[in-house]
Amino acid sequence: MKNLFFIILITLFSSAISNAKYVVSGIVTDNEGYEMANVLVKLEGTSLTAITNFDGYYSIEIPDSSGALIFSQKSFRTQKIKITSTQINVIMIFSDILIKTQNSQKWHISRKTIAN
Image (tube, rainbow, N blue to C red; front, side):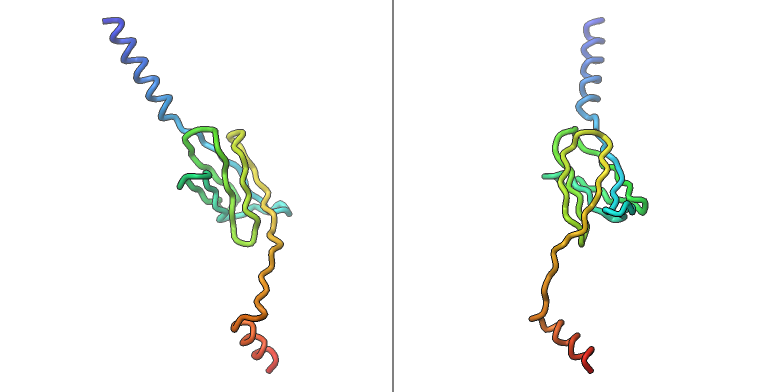
């Protein structure tokens, strides 16, 4: 009877460990130190995501401590950060890619309006 009790106890304990989640959180700022809202935080290779709040804070629950988080927002460079701790703060860098639209119909319409 004692052995059965220990087997049940070990089984429950091991299932609790296997269902344990790893939580990573932090603050996302721009290169001037301002907190960034609505940054997408995604665990690479999965559909697990989080979005930063108004204060730049995010928290994402992931299965284990391996992998990388991908941080992205329009007009900023996407960053891939390897998970090394439960606290990861990120500084987003403004993208320096410019799209030239001189040959687009929209550009010509805007230019005619300004000229007149």
